[in-house]
Image 1: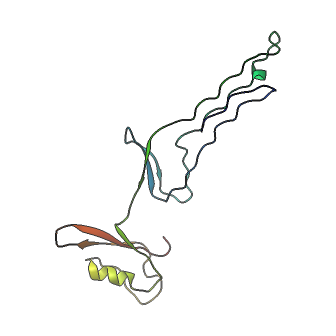
Image 2: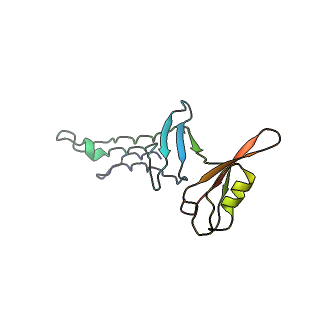
Image 3: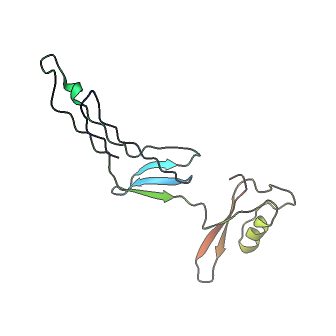
Length: 151
C-alpha cells in the first residue's frame, strides 16, 4: 500500500501497511522477471516481508525553522514497492493418502506400487511419508505418498 501525504497541525502522513498473505508450508516465492527465489517458506509460522509498504510524508511542522515559522508546504508520501512475483508450491507427490491410522493406506500403497512400506497391526506405524510410483501402460507415471497423521 502507498504512504499518505503529510498535512498541517503537526501531523505526518500515514505509512502504507505491509501486506501479509497466508500460504501453505512449502511455498516458494520467486521474482517473475528474474526467476530468482526471494523466499522459501518451509517452516510452520514462518513469515517473510517481500514488498514494503510506502513511507508517509512529513507534515509542514517538520520544515518549521526560526525564520520560517509557518511553512506552507509538506512532503508527499512515497509509493509502496511493486513487483510481480510467482508463488510456487513444492509438492511431495501427485497423490496423497490421508486418513485415520490402521485403515490400509500403507497396504494400498504396497499393492499399487513397488514401494515397501512398514505394515503392522498397530496405530501410527507410518512415522514418515512413504512414496511409491504408479506405472501406467503408456509409460507415464505418478507418485503416491502415504502421509502419516502428524504431518
